[in-house]
Length: 107
Image 1 (cartoon, rainbow, N blue to C red):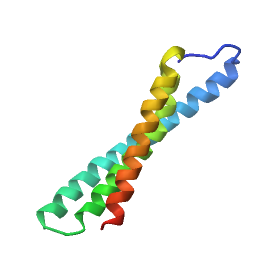
Image 2: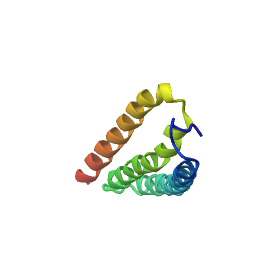
Image 3: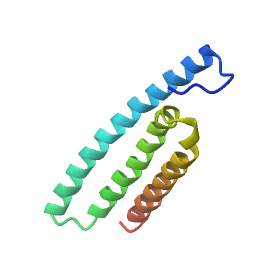
Image 4: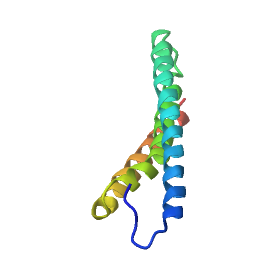
């Protein structure tokens, strides 16, 4: 992990622990996304007209997984690229939530 200048060892430990907890939550959400995609495929096979709602939930949950995983990602990258990485993560989160909510509103 990249420690910021002037950051105490105790604060770094707390932040690192929080990052790993966020990453674990992110992995659980990604597993939920995979299960949701399986359910979406099952609904498509039944020709359910509301299958898009399940896809919307999966895409929205993916954005939430990125939110929790971004803490670890941003602490792991070097300081000089954190801003660009943050912009990419913010764009990914915003796009997934807008698309997910858009699919849910059409269901």
